[in-house]
Length: 176
Ligand SMILES: [Mg+2]
Ligand SMILES: [Zn+2]
Image 1 (cartoon, rainbow, N blue to C red):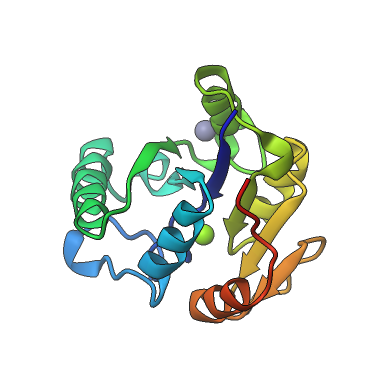
Image 2: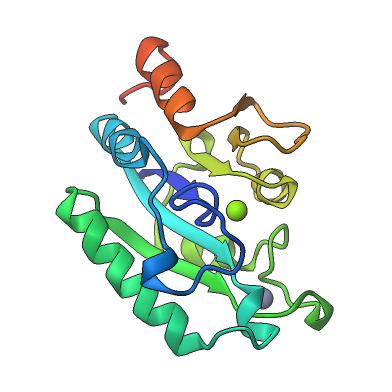
């Protein structure tokens, strides 16, 4: 069984400028590469789960999303970071799908294709819906990032950088 780190995209991997779909607007958050490499040294594999309602709302296309995703994965690979797979919900909220976070469809799909040690897995996000998703699939190890008031997260940090420094200095993420 493998331990996973489930990552939200906007606000975690990149700065959330709202409905980011262009490469020029995609800015990696400070410290994210180092944070992911830290998790990797502890034996974690990575998945991205991202709500992309901008597609359902007609702000950008599925193709725009896929082009940006390929570019993002290339950039991460240059930093020696491999993402196992990227999962996105392309529905608008009113479509009431089963994949828009905090609904569990995206993680259900991951769990159907990978054998994951959920007890020792982590989820990192910047919205309540991320943390609620974690609880909906019984992931107890959660990290909330940013300025929003988020309840019921195991850890909360203002920034990725702050999170990285904390995890490096404290034995929270254990190699096993
Ligand atoms: Mg987000
Ligand atoms: Zn959906």
